[in-house]
Length: 232
Ligand code: 5RP
Image (cartoon, rainbow, N blue to C red; front, side, top):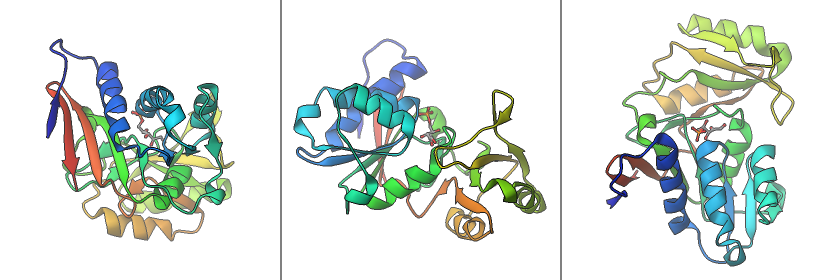
């Protein structure tokens, strides 16, 4: 299904706004909403503020999203206080035709996977540049315990990857969980489920940015001709 876009050619930012607004359709009245992280989700949070009196609140996947939600007057609940969520809405760095994703460009992958695991349905919102045939062109984010970084990097090199420690202001980026991020380029992830299982059991890996077990059920894709809905 495609919801037509306004007729002007739309910028990437406008496509993000379009899918952020379209995601409101999946928010159940009176519910608690799982909220992801990133520039596309920021558009969703802004749209959600318009219906904040019709929801109970949100469970957030990052300090950044929590701050934005609270600034707009949306209650943020702890993940530990919520048994399940009807829907989790988040962006992606890549999504394939089966709903598998690469995520973590915003360094929030661990909490994103936790909140996604609480949700009955994952609705991915993305502009069409994120749709790929095979995952791996976007450098794969992996959250790692700092003392294991070199070891995990060597294991990726053995798979043909080129790992790089993510920096912020010239020093290693520290995630909301106090860990580091490796961005691994050069991977071709043909079996996302098996790849996620394999890397997850390497000592020192907190979370790998392949979302195959917590894949999307729906993707709202912003395209030049409107919002395209993909169901998986
Ligand atoms: C953050 C993420 C984001 O969902 C992903 O990086 C996409 O971000 P954006 O909407 O800014 O392109 O996984 O950790």
